[in-house]
Image 1 (cartoon, helix red, strand yellow):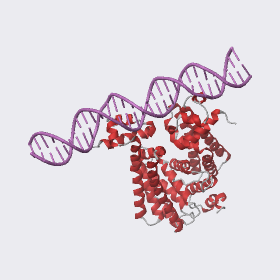
Image 2: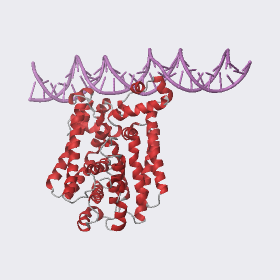
Image 3: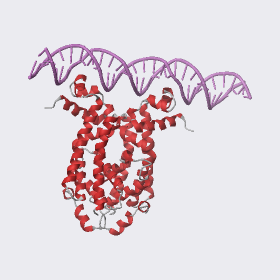
Image 4: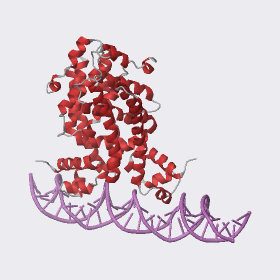
Length: 209
Length: 209
DNA sequence: CACTACAGACCAACCAGTCGGTCTTTACAT
DNA sequence: ATGTAAAGACCGACTGGTTGGTCTGTAGTG
């Protein structure tokens, strides 16, 4: 059974996902959660704090997953595969959180904003480092500017929140497979046929076709 | 010399870019534009109409550019190069428009929303068709699902609005070069060394290094 | 009796949009 | 050229409705 706090979070996510933070009033949240203004403000200092709590829940999860992926693998190729996969999969679990996150974080007061930004940067740095490591170790093409490559990866994956549907044509695992394939084709050199073709075959997805 | 209408648009773009549509009041816009409520509502029916006008300005531009790129080239490889390049470059010209566009279009009334959505879809379809055409003609890897590839491209390019700075480390042309390189590495088959390596050398950028 | 969890009436602030009015430009007849 | 009337451009006080947040009260629990 959910307590009121969780119920408020759950309901406000549904509302935020459809209408955005500013498109939803406290009154609406309160009604959707079958409670009252008093109930709401008993659990949250402000509407803004609710937004922060939502942000924090998912970004903490992403960072933790990425850190784990980073530690359990040694080769940069495997690392980036694992990071992308967990990153993509988050959108299946946390899509509403993420939608709100990317659309509304600008409205947060500086104190909240800073905390959010710090965790985001940590995650970005992790990808960046894997790419640089992969270049140094000779796995990835050295001519790619690591920061631009990182931003490209962040972009293509983050954008998922704009179009992903659970009941869509492709499952989240299939999306992850294709995106990993795209990224590895970009990162791995064209000529080293042996290693490249070995890494690029992603069985899960293409076997189905 | 700017007329009041243009001045309002110009000033509101600056404000929206920093605070989002709902973070800016008509009063603020009016003050930044050195005018009055009367002046504002003489030129716009509502605050929402202003948002629509901003949207429309840039999406019309993107679509026109992409259509032109599509018509002047014949090979899918050249087409996608040209489309991505013009697409990326829009962010240099229209960044504030785009930021507002992607953060606030959900707040628009259905009548506006529909028009926006239609133009967005047209653009998406254009990329999708080029990819499918490229696959049919044997230029691009046939195992890639065209729609997921399209969404990946849209994502990595659209995300630029989150991080691009005119005075940043890389110019918009360099970003375009790298992104085209990434995308073509993903699209072109690994084995056809001859044609692939010929298309993948983007002189502008890598010559500088 | 003290404490938590919640209820809901209430309020001050704010905001998009209105409206009667003024000033400036345009159009046209004399 | 000059008078004049209509149209367009702009002003800013005002309003009606809404919103985030407060405050007093109360039911239940240990």
